[in-house]
Image 1 (cartoon, rainbow, N blue to C red):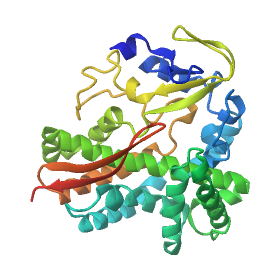
Image 2 (image 1 turned 180 degrees about the horizontal axis):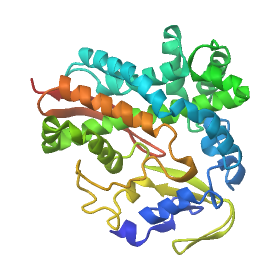
Image 3 (image 1 turned 30 degrees about the vertical axis):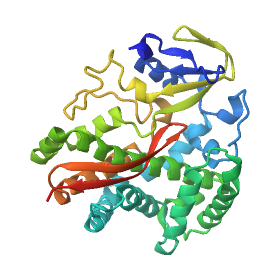
Image 4 (image 1 turned 60 degrees about the vertical axis):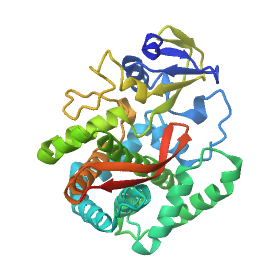
Length: 358
């Protein structure tokens, strides 16, 4: 309870950062973009070592009015109709991957990673011949956080991605359409990089966390097998209990006070969705995995103007994947050999083995 009794406090490691944990304050930060900006390059009073990462120049790091203009341009790629059109290929890919999955397989490398990659490749119009390059670019760009030793590979990946995106045939995917809609070449690359990181990492982690939750709660898994109507609720509860991104940053545009904690202009505000999603003021039995939980106002996809553009697509991929897994992987699920790595926004699962009873 200590984290909620002191929901706005200074980060002990970085005194220039304010750490926010309560649901109400996290929601306030995410929805008050004129005070808590996503534009790190413009507002951060500290050095930004990863300032050349395309994501920091994409609409996720912009304020209105340009943010709204770009979101309107790219929003057509994530309409319910577009997601519906992609669903058969998502299901076909999931079934193909599951046909090749064995108890000795690395679930991350052989299912959770390739499924969203295939979906994004189809969305962007990436040819089969360039799929391996697309995977490599994704891995390099998503793992770059400004480290000097990783910069050469990052620079190369961004350059190769740029060259490819600017030559995608006019009839293929959404990138060609965005080029024709008025986006500059740099904006096209920035948007693609945003998709690579948010679109791929979010869904991959959601699939992994779904397996971890259901393997750890066999009664919930058994209930799903008897009533698939709880698939959507299960996905939402996984998102709440184990969000794909545990937190995110905002940067103060002026001095003020938040939750009794004063802040100056240019300070970093770190909001913890992982903590907000377990706030007992909002969620009863917040540490319990409950696939019937309703309502479930988690903040895992954000809130306000930067609510995740691909949330509907991520949910659809997870629902399709879970439905096919329930059909193809019978009995109780067991997870072994989990390998993790800490990242700036949480803990990444690098690999795991999933076994099931025949």
